[in-house]
Image (cartoon, rainbow, N blue to C red):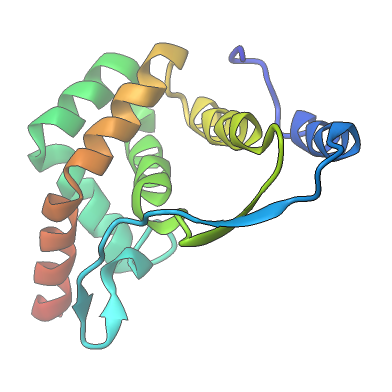
Amino acid sequence: MNQKSSARELPQSVSQALKADSQPPTAIDTPVPSSPVVGGVPLYAFDKHTRLGKQAIRQFARENDAVRRCLEQHVADYRAQAAACVAAFYADAAPVSCRLTWEGSLPLEAMGTENDLLLEGVGEQGIMPLLRAVRDNLDHLNDIRARLLKAG
């Protein structure tokens, strides 16, 4: 996928994938990252859509060496916050434990993730390293979220 790809390609691809598949979709169990709960709320709920979530992700992107280096290498400085927010979403809020799958659904999902990160300015070569850096350091992000929530 190149930088000029757009979200408009996705619905056509979904339609094509479903028409081409002769097997019915199947529900499968998939692993999800554990999420601490503070005050009855799972910490993944504090994402780019909340003030506390944006603050936590901004702090995480500055404090975490692996994430900061990846952003510096693959994203323009003025787009780093938005890229970090989308990567955090895919690392801990998007995974679901039971998902519908069909032939071609995994590449289609990967295309959607890639498209979202490209739209936020992540270079194509930086997508997987950024996602990996965020996933590998979710404990750090959750520590920041919990600290900010408790400081309140």
